[in-house]
Length: 626
Image (cartoon, rainbow, N blue to C red; front, side):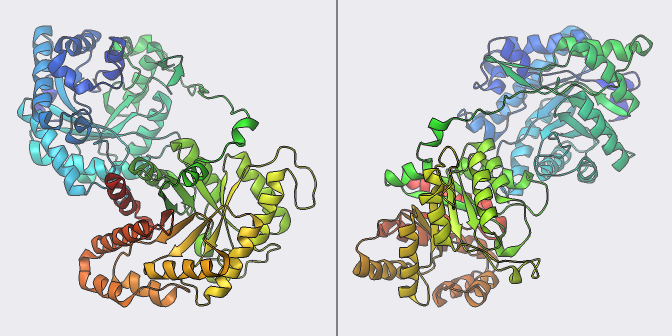
């Protein structure tokens, strides 16, 4: 903060306001409406909220511009009104402050763009910077005293916003940047409070901290960690009023104003420069914080952790629902062109980046997400856990890869039951990679059943309510089981013979290895038809976007069964630094040719190096052409 701004107030902490959206909703504004547009259409409603917080004792009020950037406004057809909406918000807040005759600072609120940045999204850093610059320039030029960049879950996005704010406002306009954290004290993408503090400070934030999150107790803990990582930094603490819970049609927050008053003192003791509230907080919460800060001797600090609020009941088993065909099965039956995408489980405990990628793919229009199990025999998190997390969080079906290698008969059956209990119905049975090529070459990779044997166990055993020994397992499972096929196999007759065994065992669909020469698909299927009649099995053809020439060369020369035509390798070599874009063009060409041939019923995208943004762009192009 500049000396001029500080001189207008007593020593910190400065008290900011609370929630804007919560109060607008209580005034009849639906959550699906554009709150930012209210600065133009219902300024009196917004002004009431500002005045209520000023009367409660707030020294900083935030403009009603949390979502007033080009990306979020575009959802309401208002992307051309970025400058108008932000300018109106500052002018409206200024009129309220002047009418109140109190020294109150106006903070320009800048929230997330509402889109993912690469590599987990399709927005490049320079595009994010431009969007932030556009909004912040409108706020600064209209007279905002400071900028508060808030509720950020992506540290890279937050840093772009800070850099944009510093470039627009220079030294004259202070910039606060606050992150939001999940219940495990990490951002959605897995960054710790210490790392967030260090990177925001390096980006140029004058004040840094945490807002939103799960309540005052967690925010106090995180602010303390940030202080330890950046001792010279000015800190901000603006928590939610506890963890939200849906009661009927309302979202309720449990933390009381008195509780917030006690934590205002705790934040002050922790060295917070700005304190305030976020979702669920009201003028009553801010008034309680004001009273506690003004008269600390009259308030007793609550040291106990806030009680956990259980917001969801255990899921009851529903036998009838389990018998319904999976969405994947229904799409195949309806002859829809299906798009699946492969994801790899994380190597450690953090699932944030994986879930961000899954969210991107679901939004782009993927039909199903394939979760690999220990690809290349590398140690990774259980694929069933990841499948369950994705399905539970985003409502998109997964296909669980189920390698037989390394599983004895007991483990195969136990793992299948566990997957079914977690709601996983689509299973892709495959031999799996030998442990000799992975992290633990000495590990046993013995197995009791080959893929066709596991398929028979699933379709003729478990799905009939029987285990491998013919014993009753109670309710039958309802797995939809897939198998592998290699269109470029060196011995196609042997591959066809193996595929016939899998079909006889009950395979419902097939996934192929990456295809770079569509003629291989046509030749294989003609050969199959000559021997056994038309292929009745739905097939998803593998499509792997190449990343650069080195990637293409490695795949062609070192991956067994892989074949990339020389013409495609030359294209990747000529592309040079434009390799990712060229690889995407090739993938889209292959996809279009495969789809036009009618030989397969979908594709199975395998994005290189977890570049899910590449897969999302391909899906987006396909969906727009439908």
